[in-house]
Length: 146
Image (cartoon, rainbow, N blue to C red):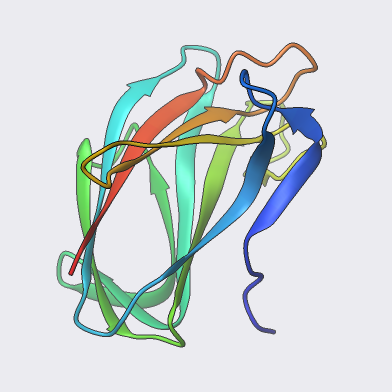
């Protein structure tokens, strides 16, 4: 089954009133490097990222088509190399609430508030669940290296 494209959560709005990104999809090419840098993690639950492409992504010495990266077991900066791809890198926030549900994502009230900085770095501030979002569950930057 192909990975989804960019998907917005129209049930949740960012602080500026814009729609929130539920699933992000960025244009990438084989050989490209992408850096994910964790800025902050909320205290409530375990937080992480799902990262995938139709092809292969290398982190360290391992290649996979899909990765689960938890902030409590990965370094604060993760370099991803696109080995083989359909041209899209897909990612979204995940969490483990400790309520015996395992990995959770894409709830009715979850999503990523996106700010693009002048230098092109993309900052994502995530809300996991809750109708009073503060977008502090996980904050991370994504830098695309050409």
